[in-house]
Image 1 (tube, one colour):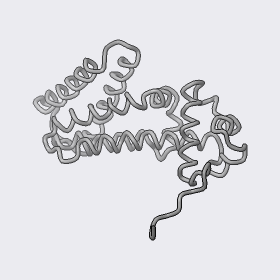
Image 2 (cartoon, one colour; image 1 turned 45 degrees about the horizontal axis):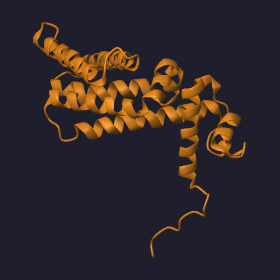
Image 3 (cartoon, helix red, strand yellow; image 1 turned 90 degrees about the vertical axis):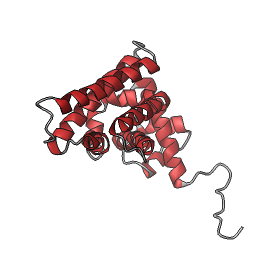
Amino acid sequence: MAGTAAAPPFGRLTKEDRREQLLDSAADIIVERGPASLTMEGLAERASVSKALPYQHFENAGAVLVALYAREIGWLGRRVFEAVGGVTDPEQRVRAAIHAYFDVVAERGRVLEVFSGHGADVAAEADDGARTGVEFVATLLVQPFGFTGGRARMLASMFLGTLAGATESWVKGDGGRVRVEATVTAVILGGLRDIMKSSIGSPE
């Protein structure tokens, strides 16, 4: 059909698909043995490709980890952004965002858990991923409550910390998803309401 790109030969992947395959293989390795176990040779073996092929996509194993972190956090951010699209009520935005976050953790939690425990340096290299997360939450979820500037970023950091703690409890089996999600939602919304009502609730 005119205008339709020809499919790659059987067994061949496009450059983008091959990169994704390598990242998927890297995710399997770090979930099984931790980030420190990732090597370029091990990645090639897991992906069933030549030893030279991973170097066509990544400089070294550290670059693979940075790319994997960026991909996983990017997926998480997009899912949350899509979930709150069109939702104008601030509290409903928080509820929708937390629900989407737990959906992603259910799907990709094992990889995200590895990075939460060992990913500080990786996040810093991935275009300051931790800081970007704070700005994302501040803009998307905290500012609709009327908080701006440094106050919004401070509350966003606390928001993320509370969410991380709840996720850890869920992963450890301290509660099922429904209970943990409902609890962390109540804690975050209750905290925001109390701050707005109290003497420390000025926007700045």
